[in-house]
Image (cartoon, rainbow, N blue to C red; front, side, top):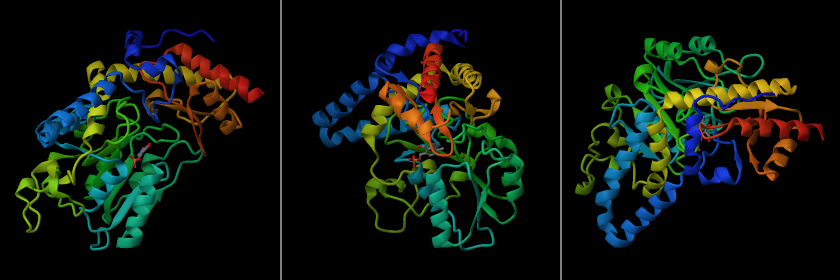
Length: 390
Ligand SMILES: Cc1ncc(COP(=O)(O)O)c(C=O)c1O
């Protein structure tokens, strides 16, 4: 198999910013993106400030949290000032769900899909179990790679309160055709909650252009931000109408007034801030986010598509079963392949310091980022072929 450098080979100049790339064949960016070398320095900045300023450090930390949240907002096409950092997607969803009364009205249906994140499935199942309402889970199409947009649209009706879907599916990397889903949801008066976790940082996400109501995700994958920062963005046209029950003192319009009355909500996204934020996580994440913004998501997408296509074609050439869409425009940032005995092959790859992951019902997930070389993609395919045959 002959390989080229792939799209935008100039991005390889940035490899030195991600030290692990010297020590591992790092192809698992759909699970945990590589740490940016500036992250270590930023964590020192955080510690220095705490150590030197004590409580006065909050005067720096609070504005920094908002700046970092807006960096994520830039990546997902959210309006400035409409994104807040939360612990993770589960935490962000809890905050979102607390705005709605699932059991209270004729509008009490949540539509989601079998391809969504299991944590979100557990979440909505328990919400409905405790508070009432109905959960409709649209199944996979035959073949188990994607969920048909038509079936999601058909499941949405005038009783639908929320439509909770992933832009890129975590198992197979299938990319949802979102526009018809948003159109159907809005036609029926439902709110769209988009999980853009697997998409953010590897393909263009434009919350405003999609007219999505609420967008959630986190930082450990292609954003290279590490754990501790989930994010929640709410369309400015909607946010003032939402009254979350899962609030904390920083959700208040004047947190430092320490009022005892009913909450007076902060303006805009501030009402979703909750309690004391995870400052070190935001410090750690900023260099990863900034690199994505500086490079530009279009260039990243073009490189990602060229690398995932190379992986997909190479997998087919070697006779592996491919569990991701072959159309690059219907695919996210990883390719799932099943060479047979995927779990055993995966474990052996890790021993060889070729980092990928394994998902039951899918296979081996390989998620290159802009800093991966085509040689690394060929290396993993050759290693899989050798291990699968042994
Ligand atoms: C689509 C998607 N949503 C959510 C998550 C994670 O959710 P949480 O932030 O609650 O751990 C993942 C993967 O970790 C994912 O792939």
